[in-house]
Length: 191
Image (cartoon, rainbow, N blue to C red; front, side, top):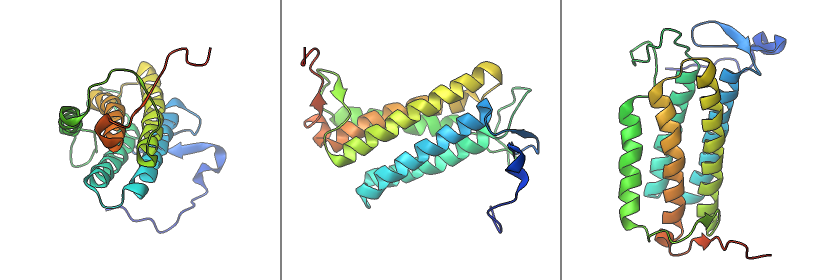
């Protein structure tokens, strides 16, 4: 269990922050950028949850918010040897978390109206919030893949952040009356 008795420690006043392994890195480094983008995505998902109240979608998003904390812990635990096996001591995104997202995407796709056009990020307020969260997750994915070009990153973590944006896309469509109220893109409409 995590226990935070003090919110500020002053240890980061020099522009560094600590990782799980005890090492300190620059707050502007790629690893911290990736962790920060995941945190932003989690906050955007929290905003979506706030308007969904106690629906099944809110419960799914709260589950995802917990997974995103797991993802942050995973990213904050470097593995220079490429060993990304979860253990009692090291929290990692597991393939089962990716598979849960895939099952949720497949279930949603079965009830959605077929796509006949690209859709604009909007429709209902709930769907618009899901689209904002999706765009935020895409930014997190770009940051995580940039980190992966330099340092080893858990393959399940990469897959998770990629699937999550897909999940949020289908969720937005579900929230737009199963796609019936999607706002369609009209190419060249304003020429």
